[in-house]
Length: 221
Picture 1 (cartoon, one colour):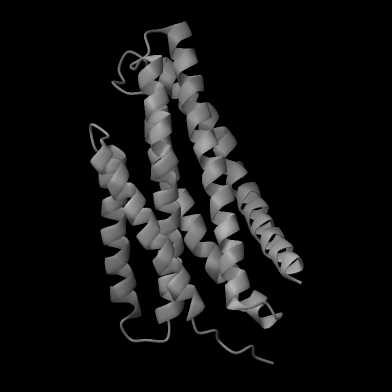
Picture 2: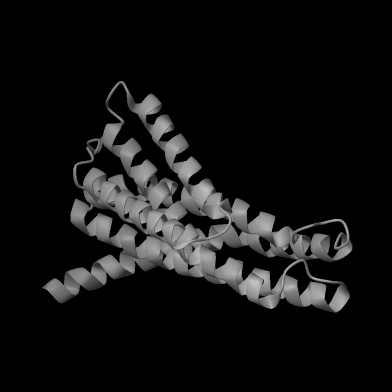
């Protein structure tokens, strides 16, 4: 029985990830091609590669996708008999897959851009610096994803209360500021790593707590 429930949660997470990935591919592929073109054409004018900007903007798509998927799936899944615990676990699998794919996408773009600029001009960073920048997203991307899940779950948790919008808006501003501060902090230190890990753990814990007690609107006939 436990194995069956675990597989159901895993399949749910995989399904949510593949659906989200398909929707993102519509702009990821042309966006990547455009970014590489800008990097090569304006290599002499840009102090940093254009992919660095794209990678940063992409983190917000990760956060928004993580938050939106909760509202897309939770009411209908609970209505079909899944428990909040199962939905929460499925969303955790979804978040892990989304983070892994996003980190690979960002890292591949950074190394591809470095290779293109090395062939066409002088790259703005060394290969080691590029690797370090890619490694940073091992923490930055999960932080954005956990933040998106927390904000989405918070909105679901407080949607029937009068302070919903101010509370969610304030939370989004604070967490978004923390994400950007860690993403752009120079240099990346042990303190930055510890702060990122603490924020990820706190956001994940908050997400689970909100999901476990989120009210579900009764299904209408």
